[in-house]
Length: 299
Image (cartoon, rainbow, N blue to C red; front, side, top):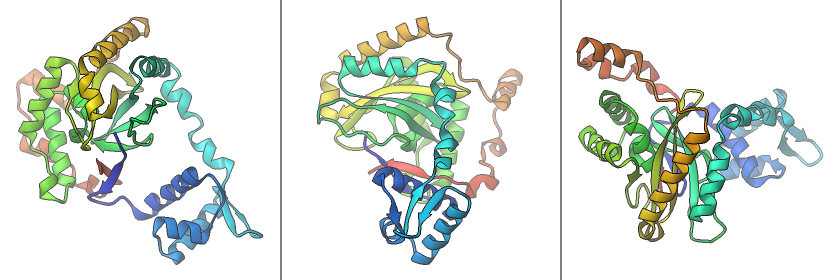
């Protein structure tokens, strides 16, 4: 489960660059000079200068005139300091991941749906070298990951179809567009088995097995999975499935209660009155086409 790469329509440039600057600091973990930043990120020097000056003026970067180096301030940490308790404070998900890491000795992940993608919000890796885990926060298309198919399996077919159409709407390369019928076929298989296992997806030589948790974090649906080198996962498939199914069953017994993924309001009305979704309702809203979609695919 290695990291993804950015493709298709680009997010708003200034917003993306701001976040990439902070990600660079997170990777380097030291003060950085102007040259370090624009060289590492490939930005024009003038644009980088203006961006950094703006972040200094708003209090998110500190500038040391003696060393000509920048460093994030505590104001950056405050932005997300509340998220840990907000996302994980009431679910006990970390305990579940710890348990699964010990029992499987493979990479285990907690993933959420984020618009058309899944996002790895928590990743635990084993001590051995037989692993290829992506960084936490990595995103992949729902239609290009085991966890994505698991989350799609919790939706109605009409919702899955709309997601496929939205994916194709944003995909500039026809070769990378998805076939809704193929996705629905895979989703049906996941519903039947209760988990998703597709070898070498999205990256050759790595595989994962994903399971629905049947719960949400503040309305965000969850999936959990295990991944690693394809040969290791294939050889232990039955064992890993059994470990996860038992752990999830035990987790649900001690959790406050699973929260099902609700159908959208228009889905409910269509089902109740027997109407099929119109072509108009299937069409993605054009206003969102220029949104900050950073679509990620395995390299």
